[in-house]
Length: 186
Length: 193
Image 1 (cartoon, one colour):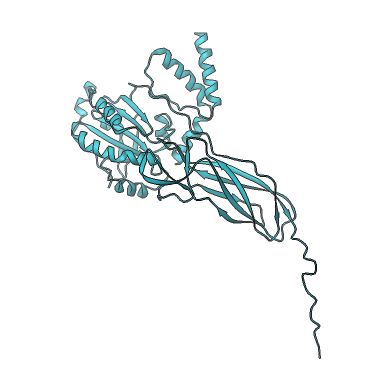
Image 2 (cartoon, chains in turn blue, orange; image 1 turned 30 degrees about the vertical axis):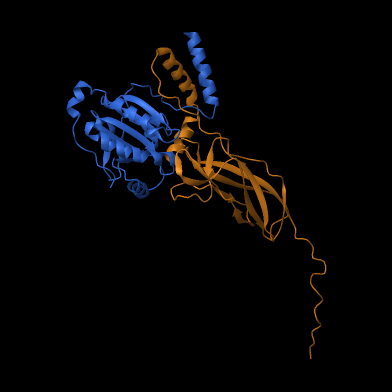
């Protein structure tokens, strides 16, 4: 045990020395996605746990992020295609741009899923979001199924979406799996 | 942007020790860790600027040589989208030393895997920004330090990183204007009647 602790401290020391230290907390696969409440572009507050029962694609992005812009039309298609099967895509804008600017950007991109105004505290919950885009796939049971950092192919994202859709809601959450739709940005 | 920037700065203040231990525990306990988080890009750097002589009441251009780390690019001063963050130098000069023009190089027009159909105007590798330094006549000759920051936002081929600022400083030696000798010709005699 002492060896493990010593090794842990050694690794930690070197991580701390590196300016490229990794984020805390470290999210493990199958851990429950941290819950949060954020304001959407329409002014309403959205809580992640309200989507329990659905498969959620949680995408951190920003208006200044070129690769994020590439993914957005894919997300629009995925929402159209898999929405009826219980997929809910949620965008979190980690941006200093105004709500109006973010709304304009989302509208120009034809986004058909809700965009939330990000906060530092939510970024911290998800490991610090060191680069964008960063996408978490959350199963119907609220557990993290996959994480995609940076721009990847659409097929890879779609595979992860299917994986999230294949999960089963926790038994006491089945009732919460409502068919209520979430408003897209206005 | 502050959202990400602040998060990064918090993480860089020693969370690594905790993380290392947690990571180790994760490995040893067999918990499947999610994809490893890549380190943030190394920062843009500026080469040391040799002491530059500047003359009072004149503008002297001082060249600042920056380097973008390999594999990354930053937006030029004139990116092609209103949403992109332009590279910009902001100087805060001593009293009576006026900031002249700032000459940014044109960006390289490149395409990237994330934007194959759209050329972006970027700086990659080395680029030079020239800053005009214009000491007023009232400045006492001597050495002065010019300070400022270069704000930029970097991306690689697949991801973008939060905007950062690079402190910039260089020294100038302010000299008097050259003596003009017999610059003023003798005045014509005034005739007073």
